[in-house]
Image 1: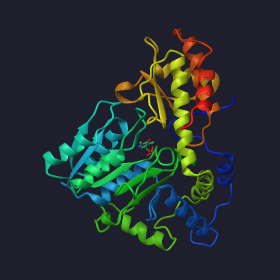
Image 2: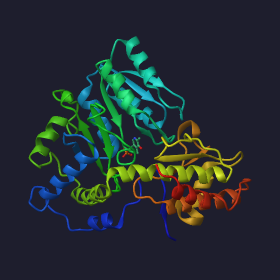
Image 3: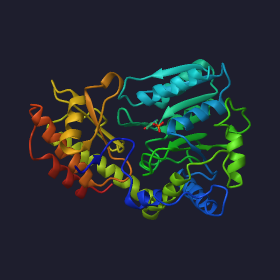
Image 4: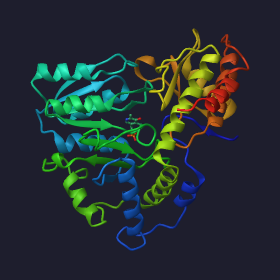
Length: 377
Ligand SMILES: *Cc1c(COP(=O)(O)O)cnc(C)c1O
């Protein structure tokens, strides 16, 4: 059966990138690797929209999140987390594991965080060492205004730390221009590469902290990276592949990628609504990364996900936490086109009608295609 991966991570990988993964292993301290590493770091720097080369780790995205807390915060330091879903909760758990004094602005899942709330909380608290936020909350489809959140953090003298794991390369993110101190990301979402690499763009202001832990010590990693070395054996095959993927992304340009994600989001929302489904994610262009769709009454999302996989080879994601069983999530991150959206919607339509849901048949795909075609960003 042909398989279709439409989850919000990991995401499909273009054939050129897959082909690069099959190349013979090169040694990381040799001229076979260093020019590729150099090129890849330059491309990564461009994608992060920063002047300072991001650090690269062999880890999943969560490793880069952990590195931020380990390098910035001492035990007992106050850290404010803006949380509105699963990945906000991950910040809370990491900061607690590092024995920070964690203060959480806890939104309902699916709510849009407001910078005014953060500013007010920081005033109440009299400041904080760092503010940890999520750009694209992949569990709900909400993309937060991290520019405004970072400004509120800066106003209070706190470092702003942004989890951009599912947003980098999908929606605009200006690390330097928006004054964000730390942006973390991973290879397996909009960067169109398999899981296994994580990145942290860090500002000069965050230098000089003493890292807790060894592997993720920013100073140690930066010292090595400055010599085109790595403190530890890098996942060389993934770096070779990432270089190809970033080349594809930058060849068309980031603006084209942002544009495409907005239009894919529109197509997916209009298609789902045409079927008679309700959206869980916001019904506007901010929601360009993941579309979360509520299941009709009496339909369990997990069963729909399983039936899509078994019957049609389509993998979507269910809900997490309090919305488990209630929504399915269609990722349109990275290497996606409108025909992927059409396939996801067509499969969903079939699976839902087999599950006995009363939905409008035969309209979702054409609505999605029309929407994609006829709406300029
Ligand atoms: C996928 C994701 C993560 C987790 O990344 P891993 O690579 O699985 O560690 C964290 N935050 C967000 C917003 C994500 O989408």
